[in-house]
Length: 281
Image: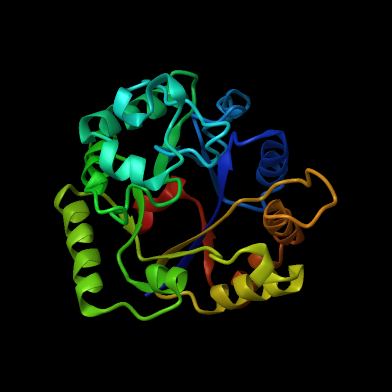
């Protein structure tokens, strides 16, 4: 079976630095798709993308990264923080969110993009909150949403992503949970990835640009048969300090170099976008 690779930039709309980096990478053909975070403060800058030229997804988000400056849900449902903003505390989301409110929020984020002319061709998720990792079956709401709008969803059918993120082989019970989630997607005829790749490490563990580059090049080398998505969060620098943001800067530099595209070419891996996903599934 042939190997395909999608290179996606997440968090379009996060801030000016993220937007500038992703816009540049898209225009130069150095990434194949992006996903827009409708609740983020600079999302308005992103929604006018030419849907006939670029592959654009909705980055479904039901949590905030920062408790001090939370993103506002588009529905302001009380169980999703209401006017106070989306919860940054995982427990608050796990024990407080109602599935009907989650489903409403997903729809509102999609409509935010489509009402402004964006041609949405896939859906993915911020921080894995729709993957069942919080003990909630929000993945059912994500699959129902994707089925209704005929969108593929970022969920891998194999266990490699979870094992790489956790740095361990999964026990049989966890593998059965993944299989059960995949079954729910297939039951609804939602297309999914064969594998998913992203670097899970903090900047302290990564240490250097070269280490990050090596991680992703090795990931390209290890692509399995079928469709793999590699997602990164490229951004321009905010300042010169080494901080968690530096990882995003390194990812921008890596994508700008074109090294991932070159390695894929060397390995006879076809680089594609979400736009043609159904043509190869």
